[in-house]
Image (cartoon, rainbow, N blue to C red; front, side, top):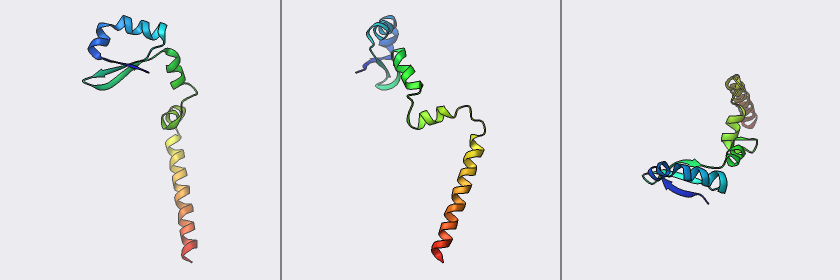
Length: 94
């Protein structure tokens, strides 16, 4: 479980926090006025989050980061789906 520290405490004890992360595998959540704003985690955790293990919408967005023609592809998909729905609706009304 991650340890929660304030921004001020993290600044004051930065070397200790980094050492605990590097050598102890600990995780820290940094809060400003009680609101989580950042996390310090082991590099292995970061690799797991950003690597092939990414899932969900953010993983999908990252997977298509370099696809410059993605917007036009998606527009085509939407047009096709819309015309398919319209065709089904016409069949139902006959």
